[in-house]
Image 1 (cartoon, rainbow, N blue to C red):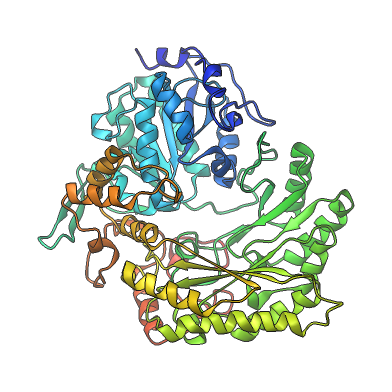
Image 2 (image 1 turned 135 degrees about the vertical axis):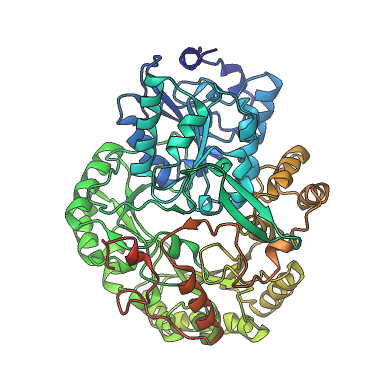
Length: 620
């Protein structure tokens, strides 16, 4: 079938399947604000795939942005694809139904592009499983001229080496401009006479576009990377991430799809800025999304009005990495409450920082809806908070919870991390001390003023070293060490008002392996898929023994990637990617961490991270 003819396939009949599965609404499409277009031979068909179930994927802001952006183009039809749940996949395989897109209900193997967003390393087997279910060869080298281009983006794309053999293109950085340039190039080449290899060779010259098959990677005898070099003349040796300069001018949807069923984040997400002024040394997002760029108050109020009108949602979430760092937060919250409070439209503020906590803003919000509040001290002791450059003190937390308890709040969540570099048992026990001080502050409030029954949820995740952070050279604690730390915390934090949640160290171990991995891991993923691994982020589906069998079959020791300290002179698998933050700065920050030396945030003092050398806008 030729390039044009493959697009004109018929609609798959799945009605009989839907009677046999849980939540058939996941597979229906046709929701409010979904887009439908007439399909012809001139249209570019793009399958936007989220490698998890509908409820997770529909909560992802990036999908909503790119879905509507692409569909604003007359010659592009973007459709949504989600990983079918286990029951639906069985029905599809038993009935020879390939993976399809929701809008047209046509097989995605007939599309021009199959795109995946990489949000989480443990979704990699889902990507391969979706390609397999679609009938698309999982290895890029096995795809023929008429197969779709497999394109990825998102935070994990910055080190996509473990899946490099499976993808054709990775978009590094913000995709709004780059994806349109890719579509324009593809359209032009279709007119001239499409050739897969030539298309990729021209696409790689676009800023932010990485074509893994155009690079050779060789290794030293000890398993570390020896060199990463382009295969062809003219292919750039370093790929620089794409940065959108002006958030007021960049596309943002004025309508979003409203699902039939409840999803994880069932509300309007209003993005207020990108980047982060902080420099938490464990946080990948804080470095790869630099620099800070804010949306203006005028732009936000206009978007809010249209989104409320076009969706009917009763809640707006102000989205960013650190919402309380938005320079006009008080102004936009006050406006939203005055404009929509009488319509019972609430505001939620994720990512609040303790040191910039504003009780007045919280009081504004609770006039409509009182939700739980989340704070992230990250570490129990001040020493360890300084090691990770958190930049907050115990008094910041106590002052904040004192204010909220006096205002009637009784439900808060505290995020901590265990296994951080230089952590000791004393640091773990300081988490308990800090939590108990929070509980004490609640009981200091007069009974008639405080909310009924205090609930403090303590979430203790496991530290995972991530690329492009000052801790990218650090080892993860072994699974045995993590288990011991978890038991120590659990045995000391027993309190009727406190609930402790922590992650399985096995999943955190695999996350570290693939976060710091290289191309040798592609075989592990292939073998894991063969073992039946999928939905690995869901504990009811995760099978660690199958993963260990896959590593053994590939003759790879996973601890090499997760539990080994790397030297500053080692070539890292992602060293050919430029996020704008220099390696010298990350080394300096790693050394500062060893001295528990705090680096001020970007609004206080420029630390010379390097982003201002490649970007002229923002606060830099």
